[in-house]
Image: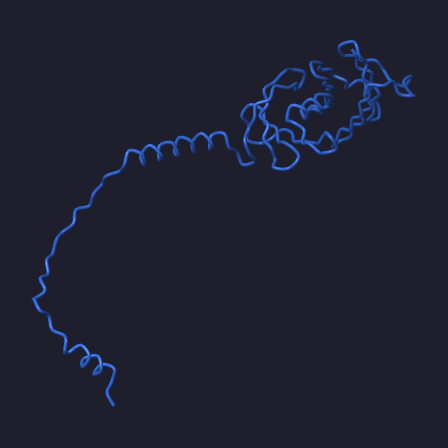
Length: 195
């Protein structure tokens, strides 16, 4: 029996070349031609990518919102958290000072609140400072209410732009709880007017 190698030799042994094969060696030069269209496309991508990276943050696109903070109108950066809320940054800080969000119902469907709406809803708040001072903020009002807090609680009436708002405040070592009501409560005689 013949091996595969022998069968191969027998098959191709009868083939002959009519003319001798000429082998040439040529060296090829590398061509560095870049088309103008390719160069412009690359430039647009780089510049566009740079702009997107500038505006992009870990949580999303930052939006500048003007809102009330500590009794003053302040520009605040709002970053969509990818869900129903935002993280809020001030003065180009790396850590958010606040987060929040919510939904409204329009035509029976949930619609995410805008960053402006979230900040507006949080324009009334109470803050306990590191030195123990307790401040009440209502848009452009900044009131020191430390002396009104008795046994960690206070019921206050704050008037802003001619309208009274009733504040029910509880303060402890670790937290502050606030309820506000624009309507006169049943126990209105227990509230103290501030200002």
